Figure 1 (spheres, rainbow, N blue to C red):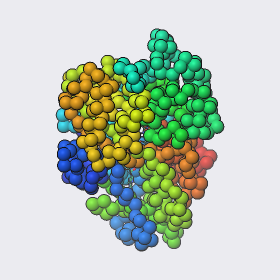
Figure 2 (spheres, rainbow, N blue to C red):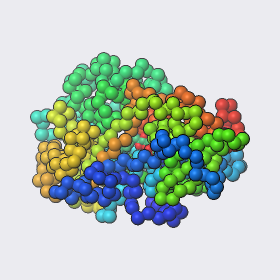
Figure 3 (cartoon, rainbow, N blue to C red):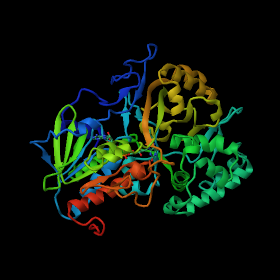
Figure 4 (cartoon, rainbow, N blue to C red):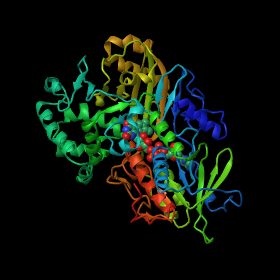
Length: 547
Ligand SMILES: Cc1cc2nc3c(=O)[nH]c(=O)nc-3n(C[C@H](O)[C@H](O)[C@H](O)COP(=O)(O)OP(=O)(O)OC[C@H]3O[C@@H](n4cnc5c(N)ncnc54)[C@H](O)[C@@H]3O)c2cc1C
């Protein structure tokens, strides 16, 4: 089904809204309009994707439920329509269908749009802007099982990267001779890293290629900086010019705060397969999951923020009451609920449930942020290949971490004859330019002008600034926090922060596994399997669902 048809269908199903990005608000105020409240000289402000926190605050959580009458009943309710919630819905629906049973599954999403952190916007003139630069890693084992790759019309990045180095006009190339033996000469001659560094890459690549994911997650955990220097023996030069910008662009935090296990896992994914982009942007991933869930009979209701979840303590049934308060007020009653929001909101929702108040005392898992600036232009891109370009001069404190031309990877990102440039800005620089989008734009243009000298005047004058996104909660930090990265089936969906959840409660989300698309799917599938077992009254621990 076409994207447009999909969204039309959902709008018809729920009440209509006059806003397009219901809960995204501008950095400068709370307006939905891009330029609202922006710097006077600025034509485009910074779009902050932070959504309102809908969950009732502490003092409200003790009030009696408004669900006196008129609650709608459901067999399973899933809270959150991101990748994990959609994966849970699909898995539960499939399992129930396989058992030739019929159960009413409702998914409640606060936002107008589904997909959570996996989303894109299409501009009126035909450019696709992913909300924050993201890549689709084809090797993710759980993602492979749930998505139809052909339908996504994926196109691959060239492996490796180009790097802007100090004092060099030409961009340097980092290639992967193990995947493309013809790159061996380029690799040896590349100014990035010494010959010794290049030799030392070999055992690292072999380790990740030959080890299972489970084995990588059993490696001794340390921070990535220590692992790169002490475990793998790389020089400061190699680390700072290539690994640092590459990994900071992925994990959004300094190397000293990244998990070495996550490094090994993601490095394996990049070594075993390709990074790619779907034709319709990352939102194509969401749309496919939505289509699948709806075809399995899942009822999806958007703009339906859950404010409180209560157990019907005192009554002799085990029902769970789910209150929603958007523009309208609705209430659902169920015996099984999957909380598929991000970890911080999940903690608030479950912390409001009787007996779980102590969760509120646990500090929130730190959230990592990122920015993304988009430019559109007519004609050729400054790179000939679909490749990532990294800032190898991180000590210079300039805003750009990496640049990519999504339309060079997949032509679906720009109309014919045009190109799209995506520029990733890490949190420190986003904070620096917080109220100064024009200055950020100018700084990015100046920096890129020095990277792509032949295009300098075009970049300064002809590239059209399309949008600046700031994503304040792009991913939870997974090193040294209360929820380190977990693999091998992810955490149990019935246990949250070490506390066994009440009967009928399940949790999923990237915070329960790895903060990746794979982690969201992996944990969603697990919660979906468990909730289906509960709904089918099959014991969770022992039963095997019918294949
Ligand atoms: C800019 C960016 C780039 C990324 N790049 C990559 C990448 O290249 N590769 C990769 O593997 N991963 C990447 N990620 C990470 C990946 O996108 C996430 O790990 C994954 O999407 C998380 O999915 P989720 O379902 O766990 O959470 P979310 O996507 O956060 O979904 C939670 C959903 O719950 C909804 N919700 C919240 N509160 C309520 C409520 N009260 N009631 C109802 N609904 C509610 C939210 O609106 C949201 O839709 C990136 C993330 C970002 C932001």
